[in-house]
Amino acid sequence: MNNSKAHVIVISNEKGGTGKSTLSMHLAIKLMQEKFHVAVIDMDGRQGTLSHYIANRRKFCNEHHLSLPIPDLLTIEPKDDASLFAAHRKEIEQQITSILTQYDAIIIDTPGNKNYLFEEAHKFADTLITPISDSLIDLNVISEIDFSHPDERHAGRYAQYIWDVKKYMAAHGKPMLNWIVVGNKISSLNSHNKNQVFGYLEKASKIYGFRVAPAIRDRVIYKELFLQGLTVLDLNHDALKCRLSVSHIAAKQEIKQLAEFICPQN
Image 1 (cartoon, rainbow, N blue to C red):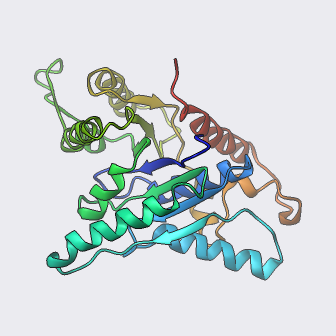
Image 2 (image 1 turned 45 degrees about the vertical axis):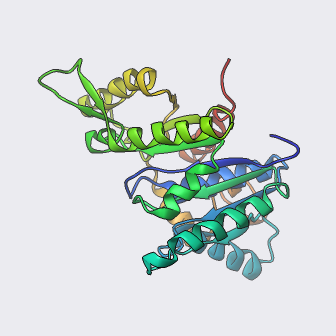
């Protein structure tokens, strides 16, 4: 972490339903448990999944007199009037710039579709984490596969967009983007489809300049914990009196691995 400016982690995919908000919350809590000062920005403020997650956490802690780490939250909703977009972009830039020196890390959860808030978030990214499922539909936003010519591939719309982001950063003298793609909500069952997706993903990583992080499994516990605002990282808290299963321990290890993976490998 940079001592003078927050390391900005953007969780993004030009597709909804990939678990961005759950991932954002778990990374924030993991970093706070490691004693980092963390803020989160919900750029998908209209849907507000991350904002609701944190509200649930505050309520749970108040009701049970618990002191669990809770990141500072900034929620940003889009303007409906296109004539206001430019002014709102400038306002968002000022808001984020003003807090960069106040935190060790800032995690930005983005909308599941490309709009001006989505674009603004990427301008601040030091690390970009793109969660995808074990689906060829998800893979398609990164690399379009022609199964009649499997060795030929074309950049998907999101990979094309990230190429533009990288050019923007280079033009503004910013460091190289640390782009990570992580399989999220992955089935525990072995399948030809899953193997095919991640086989293609490894090949695409060498072309489009991202690293593939160890996958995070699809676990019911993530859905159950949302209503309480808890994460799998909280379950060993003495006051919760939760009996950890093998699945819980494995889930904690997966989040730990992703947090460690953020540091670029030499």
